Image (tube, protein in one colour):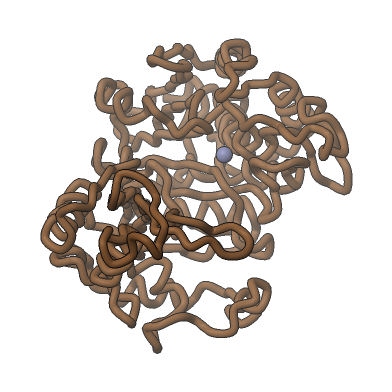
Length: 462
Ligand SMILES: [Zn+2]
């Protein structure tokens, strides 16, 4: 009996184009706004049905919030297991009046499918399912073991993901994690992302007198908490924008030659990107390349300062309170708990009267660029998109990727399928339809590449 090859599966994908798109449209018609608990349970049931129809035996994993859909096919003895993550919930569609066509009535214009969730994330996780089911339709089984975890509250910050993953370690046991979410940098080339910066968000509060005072009657008598904060902040960052809180940089890893090559190879027109933002030149330190700033260096960003009077004209007030919100983007190996301790110790040492409050955090995460599974992932993307992917060592932003790399200890690859202008979280969210199909081909190719590119025996031939 003939073996099922990737070429055969891709031919089935080509034959399935209309049905795959129709299924995605059906999924997009079902609202699933986690923030408003609107349609989420119905959408979870629909996602389950799609997995059932494809030949899986899906289950709903309950959480304290919305359930996650889990489905697996683990019949490929001796082959690796890929855990595919995605989310079926969407952002609220407001402002609805700004949509050209209603957010939950999918419409195709200019080769793009417009609907809330088209790119973020229904169109992307459904591409994975469509690629996998093409294998099942061609061969009756899969060349590798595949598990899906499709979350229902990613858009509200994945509040239960960490606990669920920790609780279901055995169920989720795998060799790698594969996620398609977010947009590419430029539609001209696909990307493979290997990690994310972490985050620590704190608020500092300084207090002076019991209430605001007349700055003439009390200036020189009452302390000014705004100055207290300014002086404290000035001890945290030097003129070269290096964070100088003791111990802050202890765990930062040097840039490896492999990472250097990858950063240098990202084809971004930096001058144009700066010009678009109205930025004349990069801030200090001089000589640090563009992507080092996003991938190799942490930041300590003043997100907002509030104190006294900021309105029109003048008011001679001596403020009673000052607060500053600070977000720190952390690079791999920095731990938000440890950094919080170090920032707290610094505040205690320099300005013990200032209160520090932790508002949130996320661990950084990274998978080595030379991880053995990076090879099949890159090959699959090249096969699906028809061009070689660009390696992006780290996203400047933060995602809960450490759930995979640290809690489960697995390599994790993020391969966005959506166009750079998918308008996720915004009106007129859209997915270029051809990119949906490229995603389906990539998912199908991923299974073949993970199986070593070897043809899989057709049913009955073993
Ligand atoms: Zn989103």
